[in-house]
Amino acid sequence: MSEHLPLLPCPFCGGTATMEQTEDNRWSVGCDAADEPACMGYQSFTTFARQRDAREAWNRRANAYADLAAAVEHANVRFQCVADEAKERGDNAGWAMASVDADRMAAALAKVQP
Image (cartoon, rainbow, N blue to C red):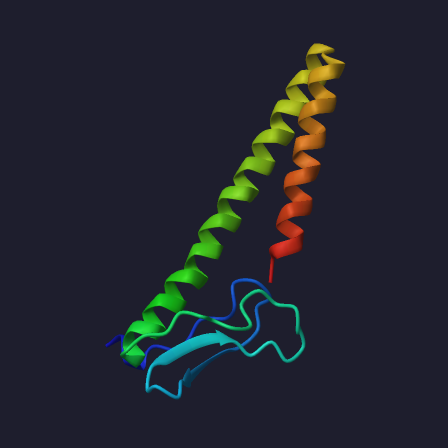
């Protein structure tokens, strides 16, 4: 059952996620963010009537990051291949553009990778 599954780490900083019950007896999950006060996952504004629903929503969010990171990494590898192919053809403009794109993808991934 999903209520027995652990909360996945924060998709933004890799920190520990915690579940809290609100004053109106609803449930919210967010990043504990003790070491990352600016973490985007720090406070979840979405609340759920059931603990199970809050846990499932958080874990889908954390899994979505992993899927996004894999897609960004794949795109980065592809940009690097395009840059290498352009360089082999002597297409310096194509090489420069693809190299910049590959560098940007790598930098973007590094910024959000836990």
